[in-house]
Image 1 (tube, one colour):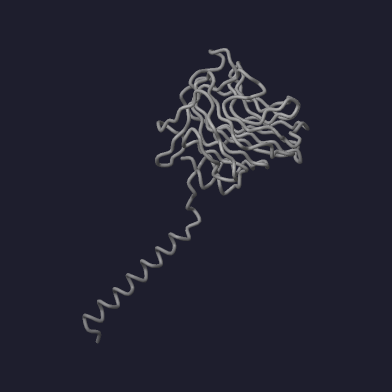
Image 2 (tube, one colour):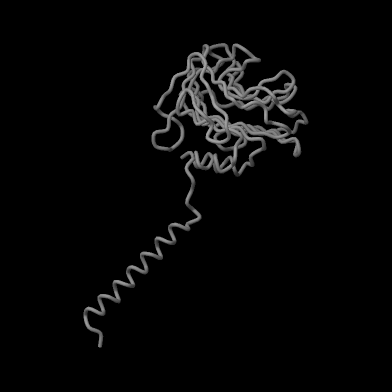
Length: 252
């Protein structure tokens, strides 16, 4: 017959063993998700500008970014669900961001930008340049036109277009992703993680060499973005629809 002390010891060992097993299960749980920043970096972008400050460095690679003109930092209502996340605000007049990333896009690429407009382009009668590498005849950039439509330009001016609901644009965050892949002949824009404009155009960037900018273009001048911008990234490949959906899900 077991003594009471032996019974207690046996129960304690069993409890400890179950606890260790449960901890081990939690560590190996495949359902655990990365936070947004870690999820972006896991996809190996050429550059990833988190824009936590108005001047800084890419989270990947060696590129830097420097604010020009009316750019301020803000910690209010930044878009992704990470503690202490911040963004930058562009004044719509002369504020923009110049990065150290030059070229890097050949026959495939992706741009990601989170934006929150402070006014509709149609109301202020001005294009809003979002981000990209502008080069006449060799474009790779995203902008809002004066009709409030979002456009993704590649190569010689060909573009795909998406018309978001104007009522959802001002003072609301949205994740814009644009991809081009010459091998498959597809050019796609994603809005909040979902594909919204797909076309099959043979035009594509050819070894881009110009600087990547945010909020204004040194080529297409006078199109300064007015509003907040955050979490900007560039890839030298076309992200898949599932990758983009996962990034958007990670933001929450």
